[in-house]
Image 1 (cartoon, rainbow, N blue to C red):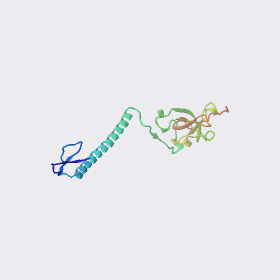
Image 2: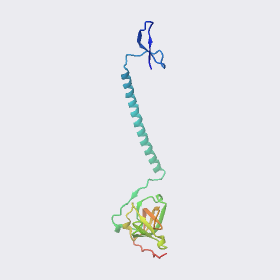
Image 3: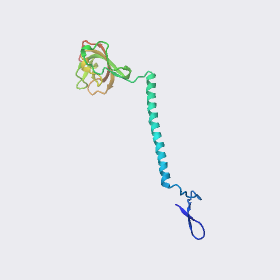
Length: 190
């Protein structure tokens, strides 16, 4: 709220003197219009804001790249997937590895014979193991084509999921071929 101060006793008003309760005694500068001062401030604000945004994006990018390089330097490589699809099953040899190359990525592993068909509707394949039907693992995999390894003895690495009917249900992420032309273990009814 502005109050105009009277110049003299004759009730004449001096338009150059403006009294504001917070700024008593300051004169209004008529040489620069108020609209021009505001537009200069907004241009400066825009430049500062743009500079801050560019600096933040650059800092974030450099931080992410630095963290990636540091992780590689410390010996913890990012998991890589190699030979995801098996083009020709006849070229598979003992010792071949398919899927994610870092076996430490997976907490569970097992050795057995791969057969088509799941366990009572769970999984697309099963891993037959010594000890009978109770030791059979239902398998699924979005990384490795299990059909190309049917009839082979393999060591699988993966993650266990909750099963409804099978004793053990695993999502396979890595397979090491032990014996390409193996014989299925004897399955007994338990």
